Length: 114
Image (cartoon, rainbow, N blue to C red; front, top):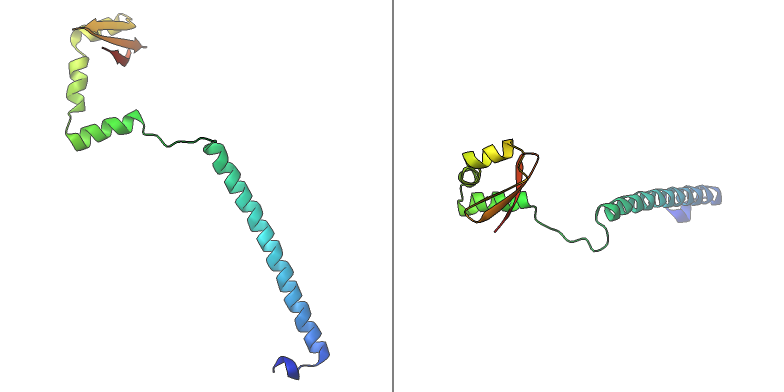
């Protein structure tokens, strides 16, 4: 049955149904906006103003190792000679060999200064 063939009572009922559906849709949209605002606030906290993507030292090292073919473990062995190991075991916080200075913290070489 088309709208033109419906009684006024049936049309009022249809009007109420549509009005109710619109109200429910608005409530759903309001809830979704609230969820979106929350997600955006969490993103903003994780990526503060001025956020710039970066590459970690670990990623750079793995890139050099895997794409350039460097043997990182061989470099590690070259640095960690028996003499350096002895110095670290003795509690050294710095060690110099062949003009290259190494800084250490808790028995771990943490940086190289040339």
